[in-house]
Image 1 (cartoon, rainbow over the protein chains, first blue to last red):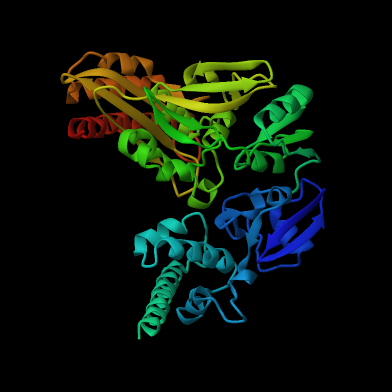
Image 2: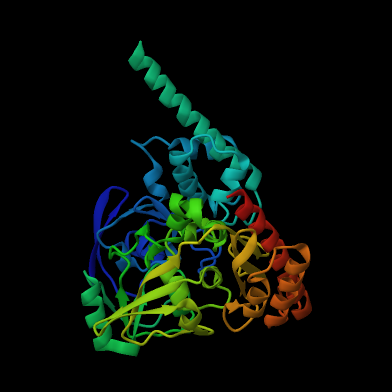
Length: 165
Length: 288
């Protein structure tokens, strides 16, 4: 079946079997290996991507379900070649150890921050509770998401101040 | 893991979906959120030859009208979790929604899909039993309504015929002052419940007008604890009455020992959670 998916802003087409999972479509057909396969049983959340802006486990969605819709992967976080604030914060705050859960954590974190720019510890932990960090590095993941929120709010304030002056 | 091969259909209307189902019958499975169906297909516990993807149909409205709350079958758990109407008037639903699976799964999983999957560890089944809800079922042959108590037949088995689709859930608007709560014991976010209980209370002039009590993950399906409900109807709410209801609910449960707990332990949790749930439901009913 021929499908067209908007991946990180660009239309991509592929001819796929309906049983192909979105995770495999992204990694094998589109060559975007930043999306990681962990448990393949809807448990670990390593394969989380954004489908029409919402985090989903790509091992539990058929690729054909993304036909005509928008997918954002970790590769799509870069903005004009610059790290997204959440990527910069994960680097600064040591929000990753082995890095396997990191793409999904950053995508879910970016969605949380868009709704709630200064989440509490509990709100961050709640938002990422469907995703497992097997290094158990949760404290720095929480710190990184909060630091990104702070950086994003400051950038917005600076922009507002420069417009006002 | 790859499921076995199937043909994919994406009908653009409910009528088209009904037509496809009358054509393919029990060779077909309806795909809503896919959060239970896709895992069982990957494990090859289900090997449908045809998948009918209804997930893009507009069937997700949550609205209160007249004497009922109507919820479209495709309402996502996250929509139910965030609904102001539900937060304001349906505390059993409002407390259950954030406890279903995990936040990422709740972005896709639907209330209709959860009810049709009929997993005894499913949360909405118990919530709907406690609220005395009904389901609307459609097919090319027409439409019918069933109480959830008749819809849920056994493990992974409902009253749906092969050509039918669950289209809507109807929850009666609670009368008088009412309260309720869903309590769930789980080892971690996203795990199946060890035990969960749904409790609803409607009061009229200080006495119990209607009690709804249902149990999750302690039998071959969601269990409505009818003896416990009947023991409360018409009575004055009291610690003793709640203790008796807890005892009767534990008696109605038939848990099995597994990695999550022994049979005796789970039965005890039912007793404690029903008592605790009734106490909280009473507090919220009196505050309402």
